[in-house]
Amino acid sequence: MGAADWVIRNFDDQIAGYDKSLGQMRNTLDHLPEHERTAVEEAARELRKARSVAAFVSLESLKIRSGV
View 1: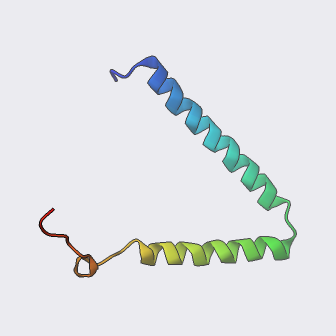
View 2 (view 1 turned 180 degrees about the horizontal axis):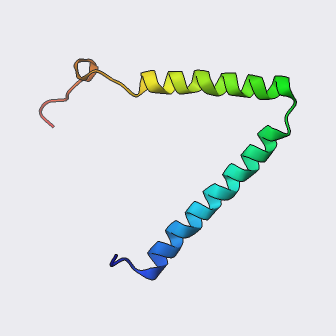
């Protein structure tokens, strides 16, 4: 790939860190009472909706600075 070993190792360490965090979060969710798990899932669903709407900004709504 041509990248230095330390660069690849850094990415591998980051991936391992995310995997560990994901495992901990899944374990926590699995051990929540049903009503709490349902509340978290509903909140996550609403957050995904809000993020998807916020991700699309029309070009017309952007203000372009001139003379910069």
